[in-house]
Length: 284
Image 1 (cartoon, rainbow, N blue to C red):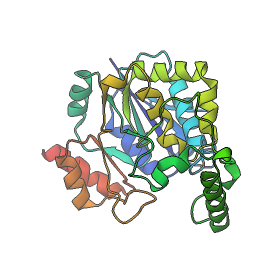
Image 2 (cartoon, one colour; image 1 turned 135 degrees about the vertical axis):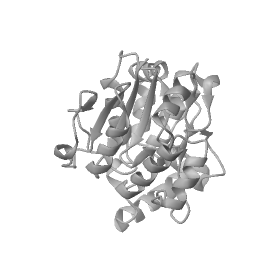
Image 3 (spheres, helix red, strand yellow; image 1 turned 180 degrees about the vertical axis):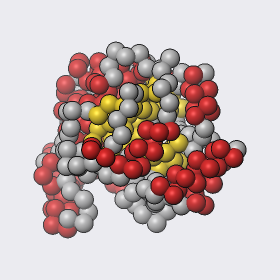
Image 4 (cartoon, one colour; image 1 turned 120 degrees about the horizontal axis):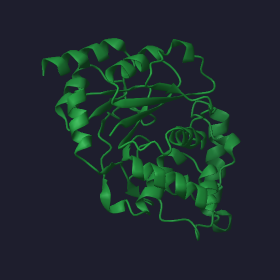
């Protein structure tokens, strides 16, 4: 059975083309380009590459990233892919194509990171992510200082006054984890069906912060697929030195990634790093 690679991106068409070139005809690639971006003309279109016409204006920390992912899901609905691999435009495989095919063709697990909320591993135990109803206009990157201060003041007020906190009565147990995953086609079809039947849950996440790190985990962990999940998304990344995003990987990181059990690595934004990966994969 074929597999699908779905990609959310907004820059570096050269890197995206390298991702496209890595995969053969056993994979179809579906690409969502941020509506603000103008890189589409630089992406090489092949018979197994599809650019989504319905493009979302993806904003940091907002529900728009979930919406973009759902659009990618809709584009492959009912196409019977064995696996769906969700990548950013800065991800790249660190295992050979033959290894990837063999690993997933002999598999039926869902590879997605998860942890139950609330958790001590997040500030505010993660409660600020879902107990606070966030008007979307105050969610902006930390460098937008005024909005950041406004959001903090608003958040602290809501978290201290219970009457203003959100009602979780009809919301399933909440989970969070990395936005990127490899799941079966059956699991993806379930998610789309769940969204259609559970508008209240869908709308709840619209006014959460970082919903892309909760939405899919929550749906899957409250489903029949729960017992089939491996709590590992098979992505190598390094958060050292930056709490907002992973570090850009260099040669020394790539060697670790290739020697790990991971299949993809992020964050990569230089062609020479991909050259290094490809050479190592050929040599090994």
